[in-house]
Each structure stands twice: as C-alpha cells, then as structure tokens.
Length: 349
Ligand code: FAD
Image (cartoon, rainbow, N blue to C red; front, top):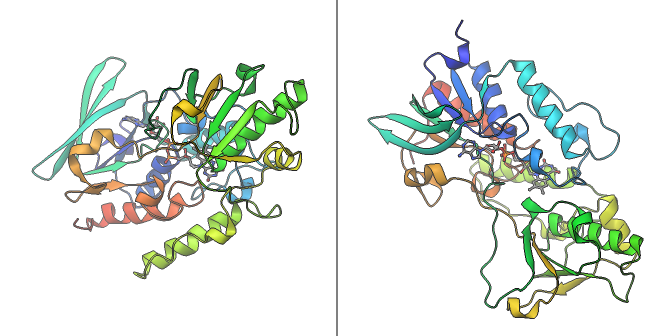
C-alpha cells in the first residue's frame, strides 16, 4: 500500500531533523503529500552527533515541536533525549523518512524540481513542484582563515569527543559563544579535577575569544533567548524592521558546568590572536560556528535567497529568521512554508 507521504509528492523535504519534521507536521495537517529524505542512518538530525556532555540550554517544557511536546526531563536534557524525542515524533505522526539518502544536487526546469540523491542501492531522483531545504548547519562547520601555522592537532565543535582525549595536553579553545564556553569549561574542570592543572597556575586550557564573553545572568536560562527570538520574529513578520538581538542580555547561557568553571576561576577569556603562529598548544578546538549546509541547492540560490518559487528554506537561524534554528522556534517558519506550499502562494523571490 502506498502511504500518503509517497504519492506523487507535492514537496520533497531534504533533511529529517527537527526543521524537516516540523514542516512535515504542517504539510500533513494541510493534506499535502510529501517525502522526507535524510542522509543519517536513524532519526535525530545533528543531535545524533553532539559531544557526550552537551545539554540543551533550556528545560524540556521549552523545547517543543508543534503537536507533540518533548517528554519531561529533570534539568537540562542531554542530546540523547532530543534524539529519542525526534524518533518518537516521527513515529507518532507515522512520517516515512527515506534513509539514508544523501542529496547531491537539486535542479529546476519548467516549474518542477528534480532532487538527485545517493541511496544504499545507487542514485535516485525525486521530482516535485516544491522542495524544502532543511539540511541544518552541522555538516558545514566554519573555521576562520588565519595566517600562520598551527603545529598541533585541530578539531572543531563537530569532532570534539569529550575531555578524555585531551588528558595531559594543553588545549586552545577558540570561540566566545555557547559551544566555546561549554567545551573550555568542561576541559578546564576535567584538568583541574585530574590534577593536570588548576586555578591560576598551569590551567592547560586557553580560551580565546574575539570579544569579552557576554554572560547571561546566572538565574536566566535559554528561555530568555527564545522569548527574545520570538518577539523579534513576530516583529519581522508584521513587516516592521528587525529590532536585532538585545546584546545587553548576553548570549552565553550559564549552564551548570560553565558556572562552576567560571566560579572556580578556570574560565577566563584571552583575546584572540592575529596569527596561528601565536598558539603553541597541543590541540586547537575551533568552536567558531557553522554555515547553512546548502551545497545541493547552491545553483538555485542567490545570496541565500531562492531564485524561483517553490524552493523553501526552514531552520538555519538568521538566514531564515530569529530563532529558526531552535527546537521551539522552528515551528512558526515551518507553518509559514507549509501554508505557502498548500495554497501555492510561494512568495516570488
Ligand atoms: P539538523 O538537526 O542538522 O538536521 C538536518 C538533517 O539533514 C540532518 O539529519 C542532516 O544529516 C541532514 N542533511 C544535511 N545535508 C543533507 C543532504 N545533502 N542530503 C540529505 N540529508 C542531509 N537549539 C535549541 O533549541 N536548544 C539548544 O539548547 C540548542 N543547543 C545547540 C547546541 C549546539 C552545539 C548547536 C550546534 C546547536 C544547538 N541548537 C539548540 C540549535 C538547533 O536546535 C540544532 O542545530 C538543530 O540540530 C537544528 O535542527 P535542523 O533540523 O535545522 O538541522
């Protein structure tokens, strides 16, 4: 029997993480047939690859996709909780996600898109008048270009395996946002606890940031960022100018490990150097963020904007809108795109 998702799809969703699933939720509600293609072996999107100690920066009640809330969790949930949630979300709505399918390119001709993918059994194509790009950012880590040479081993947030790999070594952590703070804190605490270093003398972790860290108040968690993002998104949706982020609130959430390391004097930032020649540690971990993983759509975009109707972007953060990359924030963008597909009113670029 053919399921509704695979009958002559009106939309092909590329990416089976939270953004793809939220879009599927609203397309299903609108009765629009779709397929979801994802290159992972199972549910969870990028959350499958998070480093072992990563925790959400808000509690489960504030990390919901449309329809089915995240199951309860005491404290800040680990990434495994999100993976389980996304798996149960797919199951709850009976979404068929075709896996693993790596989409290699998307082309457009006479009002239809052709999605080219590589499956376990070889190349395959799907065609539809609409394509939703929901590929996230995890597969496009960003490393800034710096002059000079670093002689040690380089890592990125995406490859950080947890502190054990760095025991007894010196480490430079580069990046003044949440992942840099969390990884630097974890490494510094692990080193202090194992006797590899300690407060003031010989902390083997140097945390490089381009600007002084902007800590959020200790009693505020990621909910404040979500509220700020939502209010920005609603303002933009009303056609008013984007008020921008409220930088006075800060942007590093004081999750327990970050707070502990800061309070122990283990988490002080060093101004970023101008050349890699000035970093002499054994390891260098780039916590310098990501770019939208839009490679397969490149020929269809101009500065990140689709060249013709029927191609939609969901997730990705500020390229799409405030909060679009977050679990709780993606729903409003998914709903808007599903509405455009259902009514055939995709905005002309
Ligand atoms: P993804 O989860 O990356 O899903 C995209 C899917 O598409 C993946 O399965 C990917 O493999 C697949 N894909 C990519 N390219 C292709 C291709 N060519 N063909 C087929 N499939 C493809 N948000 C919060 O709300 N709370 C938090 O606490 C939080 N913490 C974060 C911490 C870190 C370190 C990071 C990096 C992000 C965090 N986020 C958080 C932001 C956000 O929730 C995640 O980035 C989330 O994974 C984004 O979901 P997504 O569906 O847009 O992308």
